[in-house]
Image 1 (cartoon, rainbow, N blue to C red):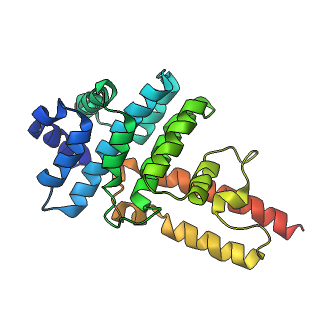
Image 2 (cartoon, rainbow, N blue to C red; image 1 turned 135 degrees about the vertical axis):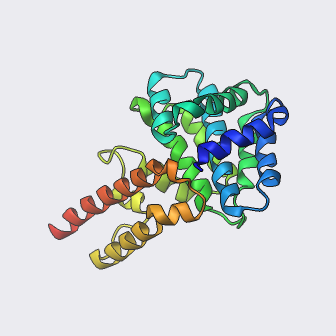
Length: 239
């Protein structure tokens, strides 16, 4: 059974709670899927992405066709489940609760409680993918994403690395993209790069809760890491 089947069943079971806002739905995920930690993470991740995407669109004030298209690049939703996703999205947009309350509830999805939680970084990456879909990151979107990162307890230096991954490499510092200081030897850069690739392999992300249906987030991240490494490699080899 796909994540969309599970999500559809879940929405049907908590229809009364959904009317009170998606923030309450996130709490319900813990109860309904208490016996299956992996499924709970996957459903919770999906709810978090849908809800915060809707809140980001509301904060920006305008939902462009580019953003809608980017949303469905991440959410490869089967036609028979499109209504479920649309319902959660609409509830989140109409809910009077601010996005900070949503982000605080989402932050509880990370069981470790540590800074730079991988699962929360995955959510932030997905939001960046949608925000930059029209070719630029607008000020309100940037403010929204930065505040979400603070609530998610993502350290500022790590947030800057995430931000750099989503900029055009003509603008972004490739060392910042990889999260490594300039001046390191090529061997150190290569070791760091290989570690990043291993840690961000799609299988690893799926193991920590990223649903297979959202694998676009993993492949986009790896592409940015590879491009930054290749740029550094060319520079160091020709130095």
